[in-house]
Amino acid sequence: MMGSDPDEERLRALDERIAKARAAAEPKRSAASKGYSQGEVAWRMVIELVAGLVIGLGIGMGLDALFGTRPLFLVLFVVIGLVAGVKVMLQSAREMQEKNDADETSARDEGK
Image (cartoon, rainbow, N blue to C red; front, side, top):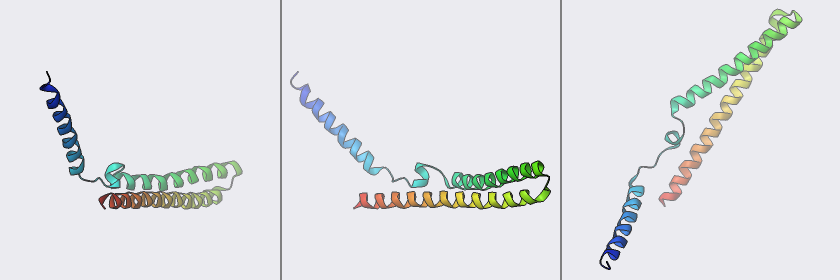
């Protein structure tokens, strides 16, 4: 029985070394592979832009129908919706870029 105890300890130590070696050998994942692919990011931005336009279109059509002023509010709120959609799209792009920069910085610091 005493002969099996050192073998178990050696096996545990070997398992730990193998786990560490596997962790070190795994390739570092980029921010895109951790979260969203470039296609998903592009679709998100397109949807944000289109959502702004559609919401502006709906509000403009509703106000025009309510007040009887056909193109006035429609044009105004479509432009406002477009501006809002572009603003949200640019904010999302900025956030993703900052996250990507932070991930690259942390990966570079880990490599040192």
